[in-house]
Length: 149
Image (cartoon, rainbow, N blue to C red; front, side):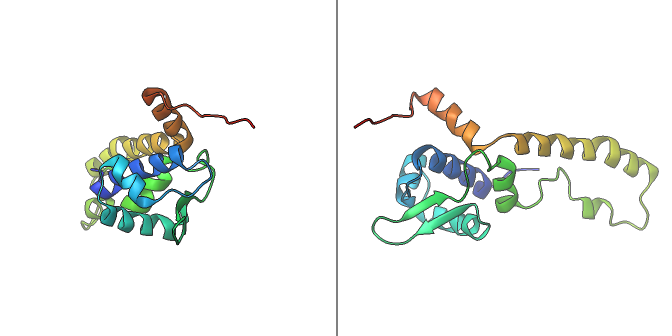
């Protein structure tokens, strides 16, 4: 399995949104600029993410995007499945398309592919946008700034 550009850029953009939104809308061009991604490409990616309910958009001069849920509730798995489809190591339909599945194929499917799929899904489902945003803040030195009046 290989994650496409759409999946990689989409994940980067969602982490960027989690880091910089803080409840406010973030302009797509700001994300594009910080991440070095074309605005046109991000528009396509965010259209898919919006239709899947992971982000909300607001039009207008002060518009942009905001996460539709708390970043602790959105996992890497949620994002990648929306942008990539199934996160399967192999195309199971192609593997099972022959007349009958041999005992060797079955053995490999159960003891290799299924276990790899399970491990991969466990990993991506355990990583949240919140944890990745927090790790990013630590790495870059961006801290949550509190303003008191």
